[in-house]
Image (spheres, one colour):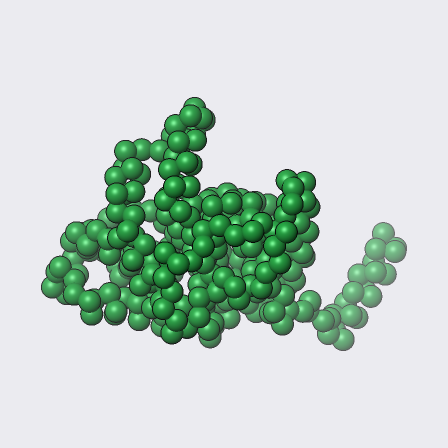
Amino acid sequence: MMKFSISDFQALPDSRIKLTKSPTSVEPLYSSKKQYQKLLKKNVDALSELQHKLYADNRYAVLLIFQGMDAAGKDGAIRHVMSGINPQGFQVFSFKQPSNNELEHDFLWRTVRCLPERGRIGIFNRSYYEEVLIVKVHPDFLMNQRLPEQLPPKQAFWRDRYRSIVEHEAHLQRSGTRIIKFFLHQSKDEQARRFMQRIDDPDKNWKLTTADIEQREYWDDYTRAYEDCINATTTKDAPWYIVPADDKQNARLIISEIFLKTLTDLPLAYPQATDAHRLELQSIRKHLDNS
């Protein structure tokens, strides 16, 4: 059974990570399905208590960003890690092809509208990072954005987009939003195996289309886009975590540990009653005693 440090999966600022050298599978944190369920439940229970304190403290928000290739396990990770948390305390947003209205604004606009308020947890299943990932692999998508820059985009265009993202996340950090970014790192062989499962399981047929297979042909291009993105946008306050994702259960445990540490490190506290509030509570007690 694996013992790990969260820093094992953290991309450091100014580092030059190579995804081809990063593992998609590591020794598991669990020895059996029963133990996996026990470990995950322990973390989920701790997360639930901290989420309650986050809400009561009402000074911080937490934003979790999930990125990865198709079938990397983003949906399952979100569903299992958040399974015991009060649904009123978090919201999940999925960002796919932008609408016509969204294309009329800058590339950050549609996600800014969905940021979590103080005391809450926001989850982005894909995010504004798609604008330096799929759009970088398919720059013709930029034609719909009617940008003032001359196309096709030069390297400076992507550098400026990375800078906009870093500055945006720095602003959120200063405003009390803590950001955790997960890249679910899956092998091409494992993706093929999961696609085959979707073909074999009638209940999962809807999850696979010809478009998914077409995007698979750009695997190397996406890998380079992710490398450039992670290297350009990982910072001390908003780091990327490269989570080996070939084992879904292991990935969920790693994600839950990182999420738990982030909440634990926040200086959260339940509000203390003022003298005036204590007097009000005593008045309420007397009313209840006499009712």
